[in-house]
Amino acid sequence: MMSANNRNKRLSSFETYAQAIAKILNLIYTLDQLSQYYDLNQISTQYLNEPFTPISSQKIANYFGGQYDKIPSLVQQTQYDPVALVTKAYQIAQQIQPDVLNSIASMYGVEPQIVKSLQVYLQIAQVLPKIVNNQSVQVTSNTQYTASPNVMKNY
Image (tube, rainbow, N blue to C red; front, side):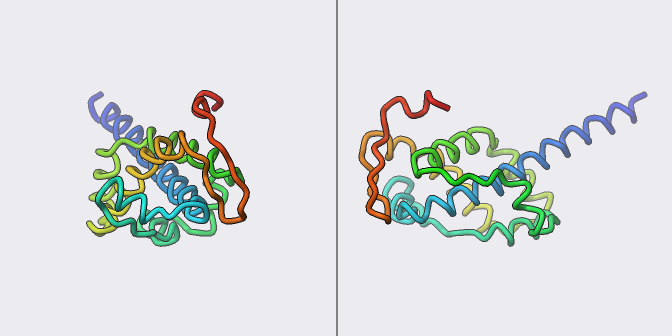
C-alpha cells in the first residue's frame, strides 16, 4: 500500500518538475525576446544589483535531458509587443517557485552560476512590470508603446 502511494507522490513531483522546466524555458525564451527592447543588464544592475547573464535555452534544455529541437513546441511562441511580453514573463515567473528551481538544479546537477542566472531571470521578470508600467517604452524600431496602468488586468 505504502509503495504505491510513494510512487504516486514521486510521479506528481516529477510532473511538477517537468512543468517547472517548461516554464523556465518559456521564461528564458520570453526574456530573450524582451532583450531586443530593453537593456536587461542595465535593469538588472540598477534594480537587483546583479549582473544579467543571458542563458541559452539550448544549454538549459541539455541539462534537463531535453532535445532542443523539441523546445519550440514546448514554448508558447509569442510575437507580442514588449508590454505583453513583460506581462507574460511576469506571469510565468509567478508560477515558478524558487524552491522548485533549486530542487531541479540539484537534481540535474546544474552549475551554481547558471542557477544564479536563472534566479536573476526570475527576479527581472518580476520587477519589469513595475519599471514598464508607468513609462512609455522606447522600442528599437522607434515605435512607442505606452503601458496603461491596468495592463496587468487585461490578461
